[in-house]
Each structure stands twice: as structure tokens, then as C-alpha cells.
Length: 250
Ligand SMILES: NC(=O)c1ccc[n+]([C@@H]2O[C@H](COP(=O)([O-])OP(=O)(O)OC[C@H]3O[C@@H](n4cnc5c(N)ncnc54)[C@H](O)[C@@H]3O)[C@@H](O)[C@H]2O)c1
Image (tube, rainbow, N blue to C red):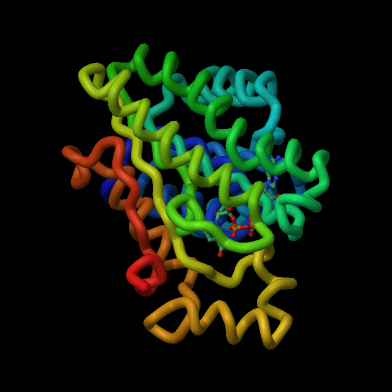
């Protein structure tokens, strides 16, 4: 058990990486606060954790709302007394169009859900972590935090923003016991990518983009997040860690 007695909060914990990471945190001994905008999904994650003998609660929160993030941290501390780990993971795929045609509302939405959410999360997590002498933050970026992807300007800009925001945490709080890193997964089949991957041409293109000749698996991503969240990564701070089957090597 790497995380005995730690309290971890996960955004977007109702599906995909967020669900898998919530289960893994609990398995490693952490008390987990699962949050999501869809209650049924979040409650399902809690059922899976408790059936497995873990400890978790669900708190509904819209990650793109500053006030929901503030309430989420307050309720976490009211319930478990502290906050040690935050996995800022909630995200959406967003619209697909070239920049000159990208709907303005779609831009505002994806920046809110995929970038402002990470700022809002950390805005309220960090003061709480400082109260208990430090903490660990892992922010979900993407390979698209490092390179472009035609048609996905909002997603690409948001994920590049997440990588930069994470670097600032290291500069501002490194001496106060807070570590923050971002992760850059390649493409993995989850609810987010399901429709894209259903399209054979799109699937073949994505496989071609990964030199290993396949997409990633959820477990291959969350193992990295677990390691970064644990004391084994004690000198990792402000970094961007890829887990992408070689996507960025091409
Ligand atoms: N799947 C991939 O290939 C891939 C690759 C790199 C990065 N990512 C990133 O991983 C993260 C998780 O994606 P996933 O693939 O697990 O997708 P997913 O759709 O399976 O899970 C995302 C979860 O976030 C929740 N969510 C969406 N909007 C929210 C909001 N405003 N507030 C709170 N919760 C919200 C959804 O309800 C869902 O439960 C995202 O940030 C995504 O950009 C995904």
C-alpha cells in the first residue's frame, strides 16, 4: 500500500482514467473523493471501490465551475479532515473544425472544462494542502499538450495550457512541500474517444500515429499517475510525463 491514510480527490472520476485511478488510489490505501458532473457514473465508481474493500465518497461537482471546486475541497476536508493528493482529470473532447470555422461557444466550453478546471481545482486544493504541510497534484494533459492535432484547436490549446500551469506550481510551491506534474497519454479507448475510434479510417490513422502500432490501455496510463502521486516520485516536480507508445517520438 503506497498511499495509506492519504486523502485523494479525483475529478471526472465517473469514467475512463478518473474511474480507474479512483479504484487504484483506494486499492493503495487512500480515502478517495470521487467527483464528476454525472452523479450516476460517480456513484458507480463508489460501488466498485466499496465492493473491493476501499473507502470513498462521491461529491457531484462541475470541474469548470470555480464555486463547485471550492465546495468540493471544503466538503472533502469536512469529511476526511485533510487533502493530500489531487488528480485533476475531468475533460471533454470538444468540437472538431479548423480554427477559422471553430464555433466560439465550443472554444469557450473546452477551455472552461479542460483548462480553467485545472486552475480552479488547484486554486482551492493548494491552500488546503499548505495547511497540512504539502501535497501532490497530477494534472491530466495529453500528447496534445505538446503537439498540434488538426481540427482540435481548443483541446490542443487547453492541454498545452495544463502543461504550463503545472510548471508554475513547481516554481511557486516547490519549497512548501507541494509537487505537481502533468501526464501526456497517447490515444486510449474511453467514453471520450469511443465515437472517434468507431470510425475505421480514424482508428487506422490513430494507430499509425503510435509507433507501437496500437492505442494505449487505461491501466497503462493510471500506473504512471499512481507513481507520480506516491513518495517514490519525491523529486519529480513541474514535469510533463508522456505515456504514449512513442507518439511524440515521430
Ligand atoms: N482517452 C484518451 O485517449 C485521452 C488521451 C489523453 C488525455 N485524455 C484526457 O484524460 C481525461 C479523462 O478522459 P477519459 O478519456 O477518461 O474520458 P471519459 O469520458 O471516459 O471520462 C471523463 C469523465 O469526466 C467527466 N466530466 C466531463 N465534464 C466534466 C465536468 N465539467 N466536470 C466534472 N466532470 C466532468 C465525465 O462525466 C466523465 O466521467 C481528459 O482530461 C482527457 O482530455 C484522454
